[in-house]
Length: 466
Image (cartoon, rainbow, N blue to C red; front, side):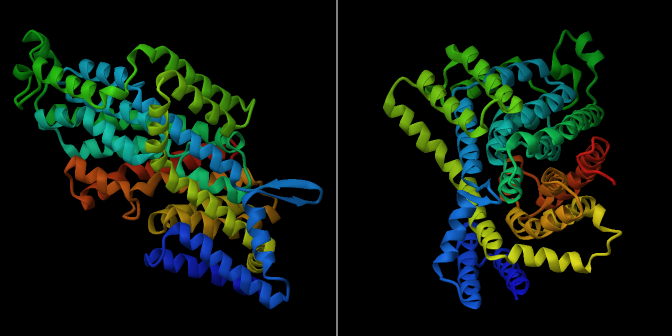
Protein backbone atom coordinates (compact mmCIF):
# COMPACT_ATOMS: atom_id res chain seq x y z
CA UNK A 1 0.00 0.00 0.00
CA UNK A 2 2.81 2.45 0.86
CA UNK A 3 4.53 1.78 -2.46
CA UNK A 4 1.26 2.36 -4.34
CA UNK A 5 0.65 5.64 -2.51
CA UNK A 6 4.23 6.71 -3.22
CA UNK A 7 3.92 5.95 -6.93
CA UNK A 8 0.60 7.78 -7.05
CA UNK A 9 2.03 10.85 -5.32
CA UNK A 10 4.96 11.06 -7.76
CA UNK A 11 2.74 10.49 -10.81
CA UNK A 12 0.19 13.10 -9.69
CA UNK A 13 3.01 15.59 -9.05
CA UNK A 14 4.57 15.01 -12.48
CA UNK A 15 1.25 15.12 -14.37
CA UNK A 16 0.18 18.39 -12.73
CA UNK A 17 3.62 19.83 -13.36
CA UNK A 18 3.77 18.81 -17.01
CA UNK A 19 0.24 20.04 -17.71
CA UNK A 20 1.06 23.31 -15.93
CA UNK A 21 -1.86 22.92 -13.55
CA UNK A 22 0.34 23.78 -10.60
CA UNK A 23 3.66 25.50 -9.97
CA UNK A 24 6.64 23.39 -8.79
CA UNK A 25 6.75 25.06 -5.35
CA UNK A 26 3.02 24.70 -4.66
CA UNK A 27 3.06 21.12 -5.98
CA UNK A 28 5.98 20.08 -3.81
CA UNK A 29 4.25 21.43 -0.71
CA UNK A 30 0.57 20.66 -1.19
CA UNK A 31 0.76 17.31 -2.98
CA UNK A 32 3.30 16.03 -0.46
CA UNK A 33 1.23 17.23 2.47
CA UNK A 34 -1.97 15.72 1.02
CA UNK A 35 -0.41 12.29 0.55
CA UNK A 36 1.33 12.55 3.90
CA UNK A 37 -2.07 12.99 5.57
CA UNK A 38 -3.51 10.09 3.53
CA UNK A 39 -0.69 7.83 4.76
CA UNK A 40 -1.41 8.91 8.34
CA UNK A 41 -5.10 8.00 7.91
CA UNK A 42 -4.28 4.65 6.28
CA UNK A 43 -1.78 3.71 8.97
CA UNK A 44 -3.90 5.03 11.79
CA UNK A 45 -1.27 7.44 13.12
CA UNK A 46 -1.84 11.09 14.14
CA UNK A 47 -2.19 13.49 11.20
CA UNK A 48 0.33 15.75 12.92
CA UNK A 49 2.99 13.15 12.04
CA UNK A 50 2.86 14.47 8.46
CA UNK A 51 4.02 17.87 9.70
CA UNK A 52 6.73 16.17 11.74
CA UNK A 53 7.99 14.45 8.57
CA UNK A 54 8.06 17.81 6.79
CA UNK A 55 10.08 19.34 9.62
CA UNK A 56 12.58 16.48 9.43
CA UNK A 57 12.92 16.97 5.68
CA UNK A 58 13.57 20.67 6.14
CA UNK A 59 15.91 20.59 9.14
CA UNK A 60 17.20 17.26 10.41
CA UNK A 61 16.32 13.73 11.42
CA UNK A 62 18.15 11.45 13.84
CA UNK A 63 18.65 7.97 12.31
CA UNK A 64 20.55 5.31 14.24
CA UNK A 65 22.11 7.91 16.50
CA UNK A 66 23.31 9.98 13.52
CA UNK A 67 21.88 13.30 12.41
CA UNK A 68 20.66 13.37 8.82
CA UNK A 69 20.50 16.96 7.61
CA UNK A 70 17.49 18.40 5.82
CA UNK A 71 17.43 20.95 3.02
CA UNK A 72 17.89 24.13 5.07
CA UNK A 73 21.69 24.08 4.66
CA UNK A 74 21.40 23.74 0.88
CA UNK A 75 18.93 26.63 0.80
CA UNK A 76 21.40 28.87 2.65
CA UNK A 77 24.18 27.93 0.22
CA UNK A 78 22.02 28.61 -2.82
CA UNK A 79 20.59 31.88 -1.51
CA UNK A 80 23.88 33.54 -0.65
CA UNK A 81 25.78 32.14 -3.64
CA UNK A 82 23.26 33.80 -5.98
CA UNK A 83 23.35 37.02 -3.94
CA UNK A 84 27.15 37.11 -3.92
CA UNK A 85 27.60 36.64 -7.66
CA UNK A 86 24.80 39.08 -8.40
CA UNK A 87 26.63 41.71 -6.33
CA UNK A 88 29.87 40.98 -8.20
CA UNK A 89 28.01 41.62 -11.45
CA UNK A 90 26.56 44.84 -9.99
CA UNK A 91 29.97 46.22 -8.99
CA UNK A 92 31.39 45.47 -12.45
CA UNK A 93 33.93 42.80 -11.50
CA UNK A 94 33.65 41.15 -14.92
CA UNK A 95 33.45 44.40 -16.93
CA UNK A 96 37.22 44.86 -17.55
CA UNK A 97 37.41 41.35 -18.92
CA UNK A 98 34.49 41.97 -21.28
CA UNK A 99 35.99 45.27 -22.48
CA UNK A 100 39.42 43.71 -22.97
CA UNK A 101 38.00 40.88 -25.05
CA UNK A 102 35.97 43.27 -27.20
CA UNK A 103 39.07 45.37 -27.89
CA UNK A 104 41.10 42.26 -28.63
CA UNK A 105 38.56 41.01 -31.18
CA UNK A 106 39.18 43.98 -33.57
CA UNK A 107 36.37 42.91 -35.88
CA UNK A 108 37.79 39.41 -36.44
CA UNK A 109 34.89 36.86 -36.45
CA UNK A 110 37.14 34.18 -34.97
CA UNK A 111 38.27 36.41 -32.12
CA UNK A 112 34.71 37.55 -31.50
CA UNK A 113 33.48 33.95 -31.21
CA UNK A 114 36.30 33.02 -28.84
CA UNK A 115 35.72 36.17 -26.76
CA UNK A 116 31.97 35.51 -26.61
CA UNK A 117 32.51 31.95 -25.41
CA UNK A 118 34.95 33.12 -22.73
CA UNK A 119 32.61 35.86 -21.50
CA UNK A 120 29.79 33.29 -21.33
CA UNK A 121 31.97 30.95 -19.27
CA UNK A 122 32.83 33.63 -16.73
CA UNK A 123 29.36 35.17 -16.41
CA UNK A 124 27.77 31.70 -16.18
CA UNK A 125 29.53 31.20 -12.84
CA UNK A 126 26.57 32.90 -11.16
CA UNK A 127 24.48 29.86 -12.09
CA UNK A 128 21.71 31.86 -13.78
CA UNK A 129 20.95 31.53 -17.48
CA UNK A 130 18.94 34.73 -17.86
CA UNK A 131 21.72 36.86 -16.36
CA UNK A 132 24.22 35.29 -18.75
CA UNK A 133 22.02 36.00 -21.76
CA UNK A 134 21.52 39.65 -20.83
CA UNK A 135 25.17 40.37 -20.05
CA UNK A 136 26.66 38.58 -23.07
CA UNK A 137 24.20 39.99 -25.58
CA UNK A 138 24.74 43.48 -24.16
CA UNK A 139 28.48 42.99 -24.71
CA UNK A 140 28.68 41.47 -28.18
CA UNK A 141 25.31 41.54 -29.99
CA UNK A 142 26.18 44.84 -31.66
CA UNK A 143 29.42 43.31 -32.93
CA UNK A 144 27.55 40.37 -34.43
CA UNK A 145 25.06 42.69 -36.15
CA UNK A 146 27.65 45.09 -37.56
CA UNK A 147 29.77 42.26 -38.91
CA UNK A 148 26.65 40.49 -40.20
CA UNK A 149 27.73 37.38 -38.31
CA UNK A 150 25.34 34.45 -37.83
CA UNK A 151 23.36 35.22 -34.68
CA UNK A 152 22.51 31.53 -34.28
CA UNK A 153 26.19 31.10 -33.44
CA UNK A 154 25.81 33.75 -30.75
CA UNK A 155 22.98 31.74 -29.19
CA UNK A 156 25.19 28.63 -29.17
CA UNK A 157 28.16 30.51 -27.73
CA UNK A 158 25.96 31.54 -24.82
CA UNK A 159 24.03 28.29 -24.30
CA UNK A 160 26.83 25.71 -24.53
CA UNK A 161 29.17 27.34 -21.95
CA UNK A 162 26.18 28.07 -19.71
CA UNK A 163 25.08 24.43 -19.86
CA UNK A 164 28.57 23.37 -18.76
CA UNK A 165 28.71 25.78 -15.82
CA UNK A 166 25.18 24.67 -14.93
CA UNK A 167 26.97 21.95 -12.93
CA UNK A 168 28.13 24.32 -10.17
CA UNK A 169 26.62 23.62 -6.71
CA UNK A 170 24.58 26.83 -6.56
CA UNK A 171 22.93 26.21 -9.92
CA UNK A 172 19.57 24.48 -10.27
CA UNK A 173 20.39 20.79 -10.93
CA UNK A 174 22.96 20.22 -8.20
CA UNK A 175 21.01 22.37 -5.75
CA UNK A 176 18.00 20.11 -6.31
CA UNK A 177 19.96 16.85 -6.12
CA UNK A 178 21.93 17.75 -2.95
CA UNK A 179 18.97 17.68 -0.55
CA UNK A 180 17.49 14.60 -2.20
CA UNK A 181 20.75 12.68 -1.77
CA UNK A 182 21.81 14.44 1.46
CA UNK A 183 25.12 15.54 -0.08
CA UNK A 184 27.39 18.48 0.66
CA UNK A 185 28.59 20.87 -2.05
CA UNK A 186 32.24 19.82 -2.01
CA UNK A 187 31.77 16.04 -2.07
CA UNK A 188 29.25 16.41 -4.90
CA UNK A 189 31.09 19.03 -6.96
CA UNK A 190 34.66 17.68 -7.02
CA UNK A 191 33.84 14.47 -8.97
CA UNK A 192 32.26 16.48 -11.81
CA UNK A 193 35.14 18.99 -12.10
CA UNK A 194 37.18 16.83 -14.58
CA UNK A 195 34.16 16.60 -16.87
CA UNK A 196 33.58 20.35 -16.62
CA UNK A 197 37.20 21.14 -17.53
CA UNK A 198 37.21 18.86 -20.57
CA UNK A 199 33.80 20.22 -21.60
CA UNK A 200 35.14 23.80 -21.43
CA UNK A 201 37.96 22.79 -23.78
CA UNK A 202 35.32 21.37 -26.10
CA UNK A 203 33.34 24.63 -25.89
CA UNK A 204 36.50 26.54 -26.84
CA UNK A 205 36.92 24.25 -29.85
CA UNK A 206 33.30 24.92 -30.81
CA UNK A 207 33.93 28.68 -30.65
CA UNK A 208 37.05 28.28 -32.82
CA UNK A 209 35.12 26.12 -35.32
CA UNK A 210 32.25 28.61 -35.59
CA UNK A 211 34.68 31.51 -35.86
CA UNK A 212 36.57 29.89 -38.71
CA UNK A 213 33.29 29.24 -40.53
CA UNK A 214 32.38 32.92 -40.18
CA UNK A 215 35.79 34.04 -41.40
CA UNK A 216 35.27 31.97 -44.53
CA UNK A 217 31.65 33.03 -45.06
CA UNK A 218 32.44 36.73 -44.59
CA UNK A 219 35.65 36.50 -46.60
CA UNK A 220 37.64 37.80 -43.67
CA UNK A 221 41.39 37.26 -44.02
CA UNK A 222 43.77 38.29 -41.22
CA UNK A 223 46.52 38.78 -43.81
CA UNK A 224 44.37 41.38 -45.56
CA UNK A 225 43.80 43.11 -42.25
CA UNK A 226 47.54 43.44 -41.69
CA UNK A 227 48.14 44.55 -45.27
CA UNK A 228 45.51 47.28 -44.94
CA UNK A 229 46.94 48.80 -41.81
CA UNK A 230 44.50 47.08 -39.44
CA UNK A 231 41.36 48.44 -41.14
CA UNK A 232 38.76 45.74 -40.57
CA UNK A 233 36.33 47.35 -43.04
CA UNK A 234 38.82 46.89 -45.88
CA UNK A 235 39.78 43.39 -44.76
CA UNK A 236 36.24 42.00 -45.01
CA UNK A 237 33.66 42.24 -47.75
CA UNK A 238 30.95 42.45 -45.07
CA UNK A 239 30.42 45.64 -43.12
CA UNK A 240 32.89 45.41 -40.25
CA UNK A 241 33.24 47.36 -37.06
CA UNK A 242 35.70 50.19 -36.84
CA UNK A 243 37.38 51.83 -33.89
CA UNK A 244 34.46 54.22 -33.40
CA UNK A 245 31.96 51.33 -33.25
CA UNK A 246 34.07 49.50 -30.69
CA UNK A 247 34.36 52.62 -28.54
CA UNK A 248 30.58 53.09 -28.67
CA UNK A 249 29.99 49.51 -27.52
CA UNK A 250 32.48 49.90 -24.67
CA UNK A 251 30.93 53.23 -23.67
CA UNK A 252 27.47 51.65 -23.53
CA UNK A 253 28.83 48.82 -21.38
CA UNK A 254 30.49 51.26 -18.98
CA UNK A 255 27.44 53.48 -18.64
CA UNK A 256 25.04 50.60 -17.92
CA UNK A 257 24.12 50.72 -14.18
CA UNK A 258 27.10 52.99 -13.64
CA UNK A 259 25.93 54.11 -10.21
CA UNK A 260 26.34 50.54 -8.88
CA UNK A 261 29.83 49.91 -10.22
CA UNK A 262 32.94 50.17 -8.07
CA UNK A 263 35.99 50.14 -10.39
CA UNK A 264 38.31 51.34 -7.60
CA UNK A 265 37.47 48.20 -5.63
CA UNK A 266 38.20 45.82 -8.50
CA UNK A 267 41.15 44.09 -6.83
CA UNK A 268 39.31 43.68 -3.55
CA UNK A 269 36.34 42.07 -5.29
CA UNK A 270 38.58 39.82 -7.39
CA UNK A 271 40.54 38.59 -4.36
CA UNK A 272 37.29 38.09 -2.44
CA UNK A 273 35.80 36.00 -5.26
CA UNK A 274 38.93 33.88 -5.65
CA UNK A 275 39.01 33.40 -1.87
CA UNK A 276 35.39 32.27 -1.79
CA UNK A 277 35.94 29.72 -4.57
CA UNK A 278 39.10 28.44 -2.87
CA UNK A 279 37.36 27.97 0.48
CA UNK A 280 34.46 26.23 -1.23
CA UNK A 281 36.73 23.72 -2.97
CA UNK A 282 38.94 23.14 0.09
CA UNK A 283 35.83 22.59 2.22
CA UNK A 284 37.45 24.19 5.28
CA UNK A 285 34.07 25.56 6.31
CA UNK A 286 30.43 25.19 5.30
CA UNK A 287 29.75 26.60 1.82
CA UNK A 288 26.62 28.40 2.95
CA UNK A 289 28.57 30.18 5.69
CA UNK A 290 31.29 31.15 3.20
CA UNK A 291 28.81 32.81 0.85
CA UNK A 292 26.85 34.34 3.72
CA UNK A 293 29.93 36.12 5.12
CA UNK A 294 31.24 37.00 1.66
CA UNK A 295 27.91 38.57 0.69
CA UNK A 296 27.85 40.71 3.83
CA UNK A 297 31.49 41.73 3.32
CA UNK A 298 30.91 42.58 -0.35
CA UNK A 299 27.92 44.78 0.52
CA UNK A 300 29.73 46.51 3.38
CA UNK A 301 32.86 47.37 1.38
CA UNK A 302 31.24 48.23 -1.96
CA UNK A 303 28.21 50.14 -0.68
CA UNK A 304 28.83 52.31 2.37
CA UNK A 305 25.24 53.54 2.52
CA UNK A 306 23.15 51.09 4.63
CA UNK A 307 20.07 52.01 2.59
CA UNK A 308 21.80 51.04 -0.66
CA UNK A 309 23.02 47.81 0.92
CA UNK A 310 19.43 46.89 1.75
CA UNK A 311 18.19 47.86 -1.72
CA UNK A 312 20.78 45.70 -3.51
CA UNK A 313 20.03 42.79 -1.20
CA UNK A 314 16.31 43.01 -1.98
CA UNK A 315 16.84 43.60 -5.72
CA UNK A 316 19.15 40.61 -6.10
CA UNK A 317 17.05 38.55 -3.72
CA UNK A 318 14.25 38.41 -6.29
CA UNK A 319 16.48 36.27 -8.50
CA UNK A 320 17.30 33.93 -5.62
CA UNK A 321 13.76 33.48 -4.29
CA UNK A 322 12.59 30.99 -6.91
CA UNK A 323 15.46 28.47 -6.66
CA UNK A 324 15.61 28.71 -2.86
CA UNK A 325 11.88 28.12 -2.46
CA UNK A 326 12.23 24.94 -4.54
CA UNK A 327 14.95 23.66 -2.21
CA UNK A 328 12.54 24.06 0.72
CA UNK A 329 9.88 22.33 -1.38
CA UNK A 330 12.32 19.47 -1.93
CA UNK A 331 12.67 19.17 1.82
CA UNK A 332 8.92 18.75 2.15
CA UNK A 333 8.56 15.99 -0.44
CA UNK A 334 11.68 14.18 0.80
CA UNK A 335 10.52 14.45 4.40
CA UNK A 336 7.11 12.95 3.56
CA UNK A 337 8.56 10.21 1.32
CA UNK A 338 11.14 9.14 3.90
CA UNK A 339 9.19 9.73 7.10
CA UNK A 340 6.08 7.90 5.90
CA UNK A 341 8.05 4.93 4.60
CA UNK A 342 6.81 5.43 1.01
CA UNK A 343 10.35 5.87 -0.31
CA UNK A 344 11.56 2.61 1.23
CA UNK A 345 8.47 0.76 0.01
CA UNK A 346 8.94 2.01 -3.57
CA UNK A 347 12.62 1.09 -3.50
CA UNK A 348 11.89 -2.42 -2.21
CA UNK A 349 9.27 -2.96 -4.90
CA UNK A 350 11.54 -1.85 -7.76
CA UNK A 351 14.47 -3.85 -6.39
CA UNK A 352 12.27 -6.94 -6.43
CA UNK A 353 11.63 -6.62 -10.17
CA UNK A 354 15.16 -5.67 -11.30
CA UNK A 355 17.35 -8.64 -12.29
CA UNK A 356 20.27 -8.87 -9.89
CA UNK A 357 22.69 -8.87 -12.85
CA UNK A 358 21.58 -5.32 -13.75
CA UNK A 359 21.67 -3.88 -10.26
CA UNK A 360 25.32 -2.85 -10.31
CA UNK A 361 24.69 -0.72 -13.39
CA UNK A 362 21.93 1.43 -11.87
CA UNK A 363 24.07 4.66 -11.83
CA UNK A 364 25.03 4.11 -15.49
CA UNK A 365 21.39 3.39 -16.33
CA UNK A 366 20.37 6.61 -14.56
CA UNK A 367 22.96 8.60 -16.53
CA UNK A 368 21.63 7.26 -19.85
CA UNK A 369 18.00 7.81 -18.85
CA UNK A 370 18.78 11.38 -17.81
CA UNK A 371 19.41 12.42 -21.44
CA UNK A 372 15.82 12.04 -22.70
CA UNK A 373 14.30 12.61 -19.25
CA UNK A 374 15.87 16.05 -18.80
CA UNK A 375 14.72 17.12 -22.25
CA UNK A 376 11.10 16.07 -21.79
CA UNK A 377 10.69 16.62 -18.05
CA UNK A 378 11.15 19.68 -15.86
CA UNK A 379 14.15 19.57 -13.52
CA UNK A 380 11.74 19.39 -10.61
CA UNK A 381 9.97 16.30 -11.94
CA UNK A 382 13.27 14.53 -12.56
CA UNK A 383 15.09 15.42 -9.33
CA UNK A 384 12.10 15.34 -7.00
CA UNK A 385 10.09 12.63 -8.74
CA UNK A 386 12.47 10.14 -10.36
CA UNK A 387 15.73 10.53 -8.42
CA UNK A 388 14.24 9.80 -4.97
CA UNK A 389 12.91 6.50 -6.34
CA UNK A 390 16.07 5.34 -8.13
CA UNK A 391 18.57 6.43 -5.44
CA UNK A 392 17.57 3.84 -2.78
CA UNK A 393 17.66 1.11 -5.44
CA UNK A 394 21.19 2.09 -6.41
CA UNK A 395 22.21 2.12 -2.73
CA UNK A 396 20.94 -1.40 -2.29
CA UNK A 397 23.43 -2.56 -4.92
CA UNK A 398 26.37 -0.75 -3.36
CA UNK A 399 26.26 2.62 -5.13
CA UNK A 400 27.04 5.74 -3.11
CA UNK A 401 25.01 8.98 -3.04
CA UNK A 402 27.83 10.75 -4.90
CA UNK A 403 27.78 8.18 -7.71
CA UNK A 404 24.01 8.50 -8.04
CA UNK A 405 24.26 12.30 -7.92
CA UNK A 406 26.90 12.50 -10.64
CA UNK A 407 24.88 10.13 -12.83
CA UNK A 408 21.79 12.31 -12.41
CA UNK A 409 23.68 15.35 -13.73
CA UNK A 410 25.00 13.87 -16.98
CA UNK A 411 21.84 14.61 -18.96
CA UNK A 412 22.17 18.33 -18.16
CA UNK A 413 24.53 18.47 -21.14
CA UNK A 414 21.55 18.42 -23.53
CA UNK A 415 19.03 20.04 -21.20
CA UNK A 416 19.10 23.41 -22.96
CA UNK A 417 17.37 22.16 -26.09
CA UNK A 418 14.24 21.53 -24.00
CA UNK A 419 11.27 23.86 -24.52
CA UNK A 420 10.72 23.60 -20.74
CA UNK A 421 13.73 25.83 -19.95
CA UNK A 422 12.28 29.31 -19.50
CA UNK A 423 15.40 31.43 -20.09
CA UNK A 424 15.85 29.93 -23.58
CA UNK A 425 12.96 32.08 -24.78
CA UNK A 426 14.89 35.12 -23.58
CA UNK A 427 17.94 33.77 -25.43
CA UNK A 428 16.24 33.32 -28.80
CA UNK A 429 14.44 36.66 -28.45
CA UNK A 430 17.65 38.56 -27.68
CA UNK A 431 19.67 36.82 -30.40
CA UNK A 432 16.76 37.04 -32.89
CA UNK A 433 16.82 33.37 -33.93
CA UNK A 434 14.12 30.75 -34.47
CA UNK A 435 13.66 28.40 -31.51
CA UNK A 436 13.53 25.27 -33.69
CA UNK A 437 16.73 26.29 -35.52
CA UNK A 438 18.39 26.88 -32.18
CA UNK A 439 17.28 23.45 -30.86
CA UNK A 440 18.75 21.62 -33.87
CA UNK A 441 22.04 23.48 -33.71
CA UNK A 442 22.34 23.15 -29.94
CA UNK A 443 21.65 19.41 -29.89
CA UNK A 444 24.30 18.84 -32.56
CA UNK A 445 26.95 20.40 -30.32
CA UNK A 446 25.50 19.27 -26.98
CA UNK A 447 25.27 15.52 -27.69
CA UNK A 448 29.08 15.13 -27.69
CA UNK A 449 29.05 17.05 -24.40
CA UNK A 450 26.85 14.34 -22.90
CA UNK A 451 29.37 11.66 -23.83
CA UNK A 452 32.28 13.80 -22.61
CA UNK A 453 30.70 14.08 -19.16
CA UNK A 454 29.76 10.38 -19.15
CA UNK A 455 33.22 9.24 -20.29
CA UNK A 456 35.02 11.44 -17.76
CA UNK A 457 32.73 10.23 -14.97
CA UNK A 458 33.48 6.61 -15.87
CA UNK A 459 37.27 6.94 -16.20
CA UNK A 460 37.54 8.93 -12.95
CA UNK A 461 35.37 6.39 -11.11
CA UNK A 462 32.58 8.88 -10.38
CA UNK A 463 30.28 6.42 -12.16
CA UNK A 464 31.87 3.02 -11.52
CA UNK A 465 31.49 0.08 -13.89
CA UNK A 466 31.68 -2.70 -11.35
